[in-house]
Amino acid sequence: MTDWPNHAEAWRAWRDALAGERMHHGWLLAGKAGLGKRDFAMAAARELVAEPGVPQPAGEHPDIITLTYGPKDDKGEKAQAEGKPFELARSIRIKQIRAMQRRLTTRPTLGSRRAIIIDPADDLERNAANALLKSLEEPPAGTFFLLVTHRPARLLPTIRSRCRTLRFPVLTDSQLGAMLHAAGLPSDPQAIAAAEGSFGAAVRFAEEDLAPIARAISTLLASGDNGMTGRGELARLIGPRASRERVQAVFDLAQSLAARAARVAEDPARRARLIETHAALVQLAAEAPTANFDPSLLPFEIGSLLVAAAPASEPAHG
Image 1 (spheres, helix red, strand yellow):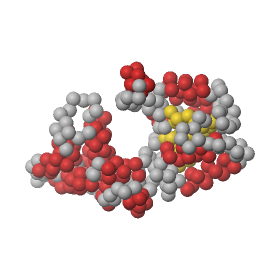
Image 2: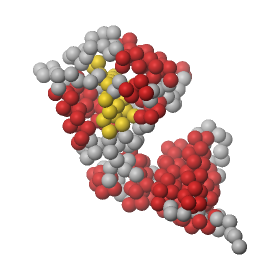
Image 3: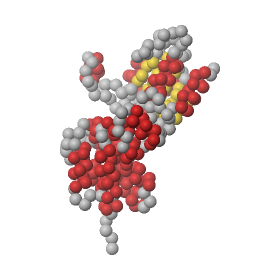
Image 4: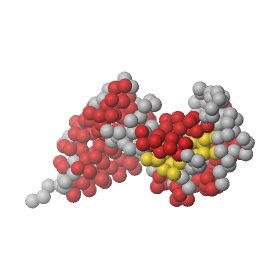
């Protein structure tokens, strides 16, 4: 996906700067996840390093360095070196920043400029962020940083202050529907609404066929579950042996629908329960990958949290 309708203003600002006399050396690409910021960073970096008369490679570029999640441990590094699958770390570590900095002591390969993409910069470890700050304070000539960030507030204020920000707006439901159609994916209105303007989320919901699950979640939030019928249906839709990716997509969907319901809830007590449910879903999602949950019972745990927010769950008075 290269034609993002929400990138027009970012491209205008980037190309105006590129054509100017002094290009800023640090850029924050800010917006929620799933808005194509990584695609923009790669395309912008290619424009930055390209020089007239110098052939540019179609694939990996020697003057574009990308830092993202690496192997989790030494075992993962060995598997990576052998071309085998490996588990990813949950952060970008200082040794990755140090390795990048060593490369900055040499000249770019094909021209006079080099681009460093860090994706997502939100997940830099603290010591890695401090090490990066030194490069941002005194960047080598011809070196430019593009930091992809979903939550800019998580970055060090000193990093934010040394970068120019490009903001990426969320997509409209009609834009999401058109993009899903172009990608050959179903465009269920409820799943699109739950994606809340994120094409990445909409794609995951479509690929995992979460539209029926979205309807089941909405029903539990709105009407509760007097017996276990609704929760049983949710468990059936999720599946008894759902992959980690599918379970995470379900969590994201449930959180989105709970948050959406809270925003439109007129009753303060109802809104408070929905907010509590959202917080509990976030906590359960964080615990699920490492806790010893029975996979067949986890969907019922999710369902019970959703039911707790429903009007039918209010205690009777009188």
